[in-house]
Every structure is written in structure tokens, then in C-alpha cells.
Image 1 (cartoon, rainbow, N blue to C red):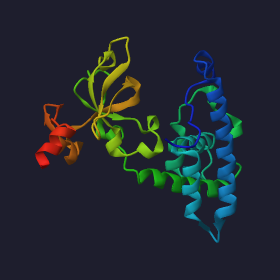
Image 2: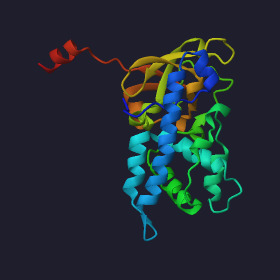
Image 3: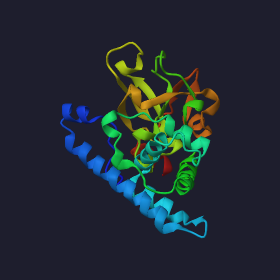
Image 4: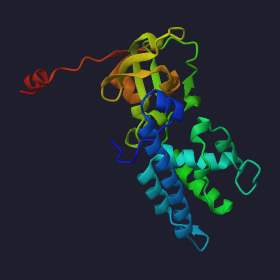
Length: 245
């Protein structure tokens, strides 16, 4: 598990309702620390029109992608009319949605816009290197029954060490959350990577992975047919030992 403080996405009111105010406060403090760390990284690592790329990676390692991306997007959302930021970065920031209680002036980065834009480019480049599944790889889940489908978990629901394409893939086996009209939200199933069984809220999934993007390792490990997966029987440890003797 990551050592940095988890990024709290819910509102302060929700935190009060769920008795998680301390988690909200810890995340808020970490957001401020992240803001200051980005300012310092820009000030200390930009020399001769060049950034020390290690500073970008160290910020991610210290605070995690979710928090760093949020802080940068929040700043870009507040700079929509500043042409010193690229159009791509401004669009990235404009689409940010977060509870009003989590949009704090404490998170404004007081660095030159050109340098902050450069820093943002480098953070986004590191994110792109993860090659994660996104909405373009998925069928919309809004009105779909999810049972038996290969689902894609949103990267924001995974710790950084599990932000990989393989760790995003989940096979739904049941639960009220599989139905688009049920009151219940839990979707039961298992990770295709290692077979670990668990449950997720329906909102945790980006969508249903399109057939053309199903990885070869999934096809080899499972019997794929008509958008469903049948688990390939794996011998028990004792059976494996006997077979090898």
C-alpha cells in the first residue's frame, strides 16, 4: 500500500456524515503540502530553460498521481483565460469536478504560468506512460447489465502501484450493482490478473471493455465467448505437485 496520505474525494459534509472528518482534514493538509512542494520543485529545478525531470517523479512518489493531478487541474480550472497555459492543459483542468468544499484557494500554486504549464506537461507525460484504459476503450455502462462482463476500474480507485492496465480489469459475477435499475450498488467479481475476489461500487467502473481491446493474456487465461468469461480451471497446489512428480 502507498505510504502517502490517501486523497479524499468526497465533500466535507459527506465526511461528517460518515464520521471521516479526520480523513478529510488529513487529505486537505496533504493537498496544501503538495501545492507548496510543486512550487518549490518549480523554483528549485528550473535552470537554463530546463527542468530536472527527477523533480516531477519525486512529487508523484511523495503525493501520488491522484493528488498531484487534482492540484494541477484545480489551478488550470482557475486559469481558463490565461493563454500562457496550453489549450490542452486548460481543457484538462476545465473538466475537473470536485465538491465545492474541496476547491480551496489554499491549493493555488504561485509559480509563473509558463513554468507551471511546463511542469504540468511533464506530469501528464508520466501519466500517459501508464497506458491505462479509459472511456475510449469502453462501452458505456449506464444502461447495461454488468454481470459476466469485463469491466474497467477507474484509475482513481486504485493506489498508484496498481495503476496498470492489467489491474484495471475486473470480471463481474453478480450483485445488485450489476443491474442499472437496482437500488443496490455492489458489483461482485474478481480481478482477471490474479483471480482475487472482491466487490466494487458500480460507480468505480469506467465501462465495459470493448472486445477489440481484450488483451491476449486474458484470452489465453480464460475461455472467452459472447462477452462472458469462463474461468480456466487451475489445479490445486497438491494436484500441481503430483503432476510434476
